[in-house]
Amino acid sequence: MKYLYGKNVLITGAGSGIGRVMALDFARNKANLALVDINPEALEAVEKEVKAFGVKTGTYVCDISKRSAVAKTVKAIRKDFNQIDILVNNAGIVIGKSFVDLSLDEMHRTMDINFWGHVYFTKEFLPDMIQRNDGHLVNIASSGGLLGMTQMSDYGASKFAEVGFSESLRRELYQAGAKNVKVTVVCPYTINTGMFEGFKPLWFNPILKAEYVGQKVVEAVKKDKPYLYLPYLGVKGMLVLKLLPTALLDWSLRLVGGSRAMNGFVGRGKQDS
Image 1: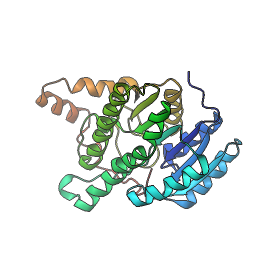
Image 2: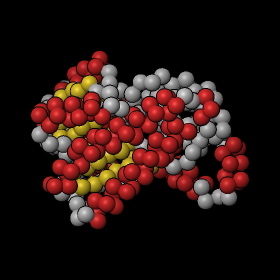
Image 3: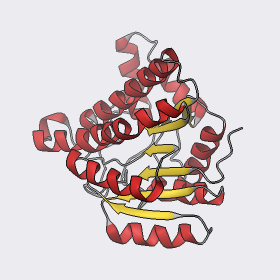
Image 4: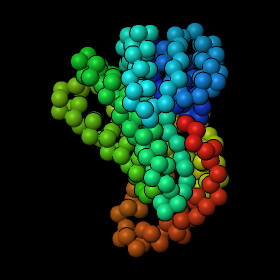
């Protein structure tokens, strides 16, 4: 069991949703927090909550889709925290349009935040972790990164990329002898953060509470879990469905409402989660 006391944890998308919840859960475990978000007001509110636990806290406003902004933010974080022990790549957006209705700019925006922003932060901090042979990467992906769904071509592409990125990193780190640098990829079903407002869940996968997801992520870090599926049986069931012949798989998804799940999607626009 890994102890979090005194560890320096960086969370992107920390101003709301599961980013905020994870910040509070790490703070309860007496970890120090470097909180990154695009929304300064949200960051300020979370900072006040986290400081109640008596841990060192820093806030950094950053559009993680911009590499130059990430580099500037990382420089400030290094000055304040010296090293980061646990990097939680969490920031993300959902647009919720079919591919033909998506503009290329929207497609790029989703990939830039949901995937490339995570890559930028990882590229900055992973070499230090390898040198110390100590550290932990937590990449918040999605069950949508395991099974493609309608009106989620951009989101699914970003999350499939996140899963593949995480799996490759884990194997590369082991092969390089950095066996104490861990990678956890988190694949939750829909969470009640407002990010998927209007989404109609599949009947066998209820919408998850953010507090539950945040708690499970911190537990997964403590236990060095390579994968976190939430809910476990529901997401595993989605993987089992992929073993079916394609026609049967598509028919099954239509039967359980997969083709209609995003019809009422409203979301919360292009905010970071």
